[in-house]
Amino acid sequence: MESRLLRHTVTSTALLSQIRGVLQRCSKWMRQHKEALGVLLFLLVVVVFIVCLFLIRPQPLFLTPYLEKGAIEEARNLSAVGKLPGVNVKSYSGYLTVNKKYNSNLFFWFIPALTEDERAPVLLWLQGGPGASGLFGLLVEHGPYVVYENMTVGMRDYAWTSRYSVLYIDSPVGTGFSFTDDGGFAQNQDDVVRDLYSALTQFFQIFPKYQSSDFYVTGESYAGKYVPAISYYIHKNNPTAKVKINMKGMAIGGGFCDPEVMLGGYGEFLYQTGMIDEQQKQCVNKQTDLAVWLIQHQNWVEAYKVFFGMVNNVKPYSYFHNATGCTNYFNYMRCQEPENYKYFAQFVMLPSVRLAIHVGNLTFNNGSDVEAHLQQDVMKSIKPWLGVLMDNYRVLIYNGQLDVITAAPLTERFLLTVNWTGAAEYKNASRFYWKLQPTDTEVAGYVKQVREFYQVIIRGGGHILPYDQPARSFDMIDRFLSMQGWV
Image 1 (cartoon, helix red, strand yellow):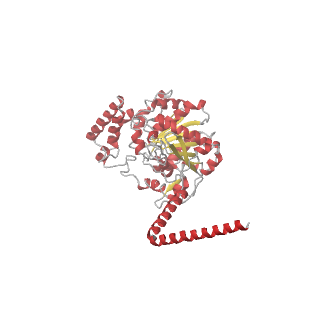
Image 2 (image 1 turned 90 degrees about the vertical axis):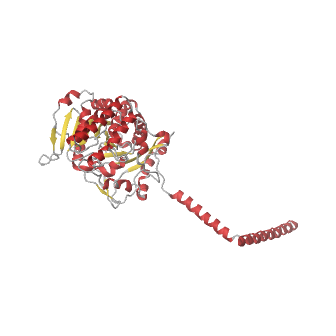
Image 3 (image 1 turned 120 degrees about the vertical axis):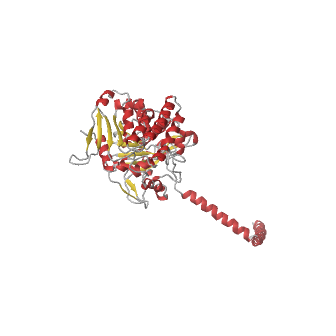
């Protein structure tokens, strides 16, 4: 034992001597490389800081993995929207994966009815564009919030969400906060509704108490194609679907539903409203006739280019701008779009808002990629689907009297050509005026009704109708959804 202790002591002494030598050499090296060490230490601090930022930055909330593992309550709880700057109401948001191959995810923001009535109908709201975010509808038109210039939100008067639950979805993928890899962009309505239907079935699994609620598909402008497309898809698939959707009807505002028939009315409409003269009308008619000819020959992209070159803000200017001096074709009483249209896009970019609605640092897309991929689809009609839906569901099609881009007379032109069992009755139906209250001196609008189909024109409003005429728009949607009707 003593000899082992001696060997251990000798070994320890030698080891200590070696350690002292190493430390001396290290000390000498550090004195010689003091500046380099400072740089290394700085770089180390930067790396640690970047790693910490990555670990603590808000991440997007993808709900599909929770659904797939059966953690439905956890998914629902996680999707609760956090505190927004200003007033707050209960709502939910997040991402639903609709195509794993292309990493395609649709963003939604769901506002339950503020009355907390679980029997209230659920509305799906789809914006137009193509490529316009559904958050425009939520924050500019009829959601619970109105965005102020100081980037806070207050409560909106006549919000549709005051009485109805509304599901706002950025659709198709690539719209707003929704995203996809290149191969996942929608090329046609079949692609659009395949993804959208996947999102809807996932939504109703995460929020099952709303599955039995009456369901209506709603939207405006180019969503005049999305709304019938997804409604028809639900109609066709519901009988055998695992997740059934209690669809009762649909509503379309200023819908670009049937370009071939609608285009021919532009020249006369612009002329009759005094926006162009006889010579300019001939020019417009020449362009719309060309676009219709291209549609009839299935040259979809060229037809799209002719039409949008005439009315859209292309470089240097559209014909509409050159002829009228106006860039705003949403309301012919306003030459420019209101400044507060833009507030919503600035608002959703705020870090606090991004954190609250679970989008992380993902891009808020302007929709240009969506539009580019749908060029083959823009000028096609959805009229055959619409006829089936009008025979089976409650349908509301409405326009603002002051709209230019999808003017009321253009809607009338195409509705007269829809093939459904009520077509003859519609052609002979009488139109009547309506007021918000019987004692009102002002007329709110005009209504034509055939069976469960309602055509409404609202006075004093344009394309963005709930913004222009919030009280009249709410009264309209309330009469339709509550089945109160107009007579």
